[in-house]
Image (cartoon, rainbow, N blue to C red; front, top):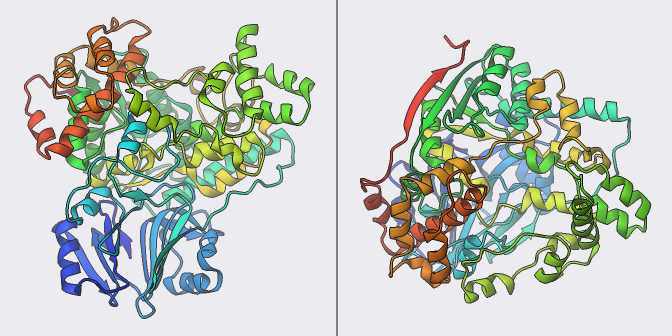
Length: 633
């Protein structure tokens, strides 16, 4: 049984039978909504699934996402998971390690009702979330946080530690959430469900493997083949696949592979911004559509309120929007679904997977190879002046070579310019710094460059909930979502590439660029920069949204005052830069974090806050215009 693309699951594990079966069913049905199917499995487990696909098996195998055997063929098996009986037999034999032999992005539940035993697990890259809390001696678990909160006797208060890290844009290594007492199951971990209770275990261990051998030409060719294979696996048996296309390297890489596998079926969708030349990528998008002969639609976005998008996201999901682009992304995804697409691909993960492995400099220093270190440093992109080279050597060489647990002051001294926002109160800053472990990734076995890359791929977005955010964009429209560049087998192979191949004086991601030369247009391959939405966010905050920004953040009863220095917030808001100034981007990021945090706190105090604010006449609706690609009928 699967959770359909629009659905979520909510479960209650009650091994001591503290609740009546009918009581448990009523509780879950009320929490998850009218569309749910609710089942009891024995006397201990009750499960509610909205938008279920298929019927429960014996033993129960529930999948949110997609799984396949580790040795699955390129096409089809992503939609044909292992049989529940065979997976249970592997679990009986090997415990949670049985999950090492499956692939995919998933949250899954495997359960034998006659034994009151099972396993609740999350994939190694954390692409599908599982939220947990304990209530009245029972375990509540869910694939989305709002149904879980609705099943509790009362809504939890904000978790001050997590919110401090969220507001300070600092990662928190603990698997907490913004709600007190609610946590995430960490990526690559599982809960063993037993008659005596539940225990957490790690089912996936990242291990540094032997470096791949072969010529650069051979490795480049194999990289292309492996990305094409992971794209074919992601497409599975989709009848109407679509792809989010930008002018960037990653989505273009996936498009070139998807078009090779399914040349007549792919459609592309893009958002473009005619009034923002630095962000508008329509010429590069149209070039790719013409070259591959693909149909596509572009959504031209004129104006619009980032605050309006944040409030809409908050109303629908009860959580802060981490992207600032919901005001145009929501109608974009709605159109994709209305056009009949059943699967959406994107290029997420390329930034982390293929970027320069800069901490290889630390490995050279730790190995006592200073000459090799200096030679390698000359091949870092963008290193021109001696001053920049020294800063890079200090940060990625000297700081990277130090043991884990180095204080923030030493990080700053050695060139790490990451700072906590200036508006944080001393108490909030202390909540971050007392739990801060800026380089916990160094404690893992393996080279520093490898450990850093694994950390980026598995833990970098957990505090903000980046992976689940991407799912929330597509769930309401019944769209499946897959990420070909985050296929685990591809990731494991890339992690074995010689780290030196990621260094190049002129370009980032040199191996990826060489692998797709001739497949991706040169204008994309040779593009030295990428587009960001910073100017769109800043223009909105400095324009139509600014009066509401002041009204919310400078109010005497602003909720954010508990966590900030009000005078610093006032100075930030009352002295905005000019829209065209270089400082507008960083100003917009700081203000957006405060604004989103304030709205979320107010929503916790008044669940009708977002709905009421969306009626405010000052919120500017975006002007949207659809434009077909030159080849579209």
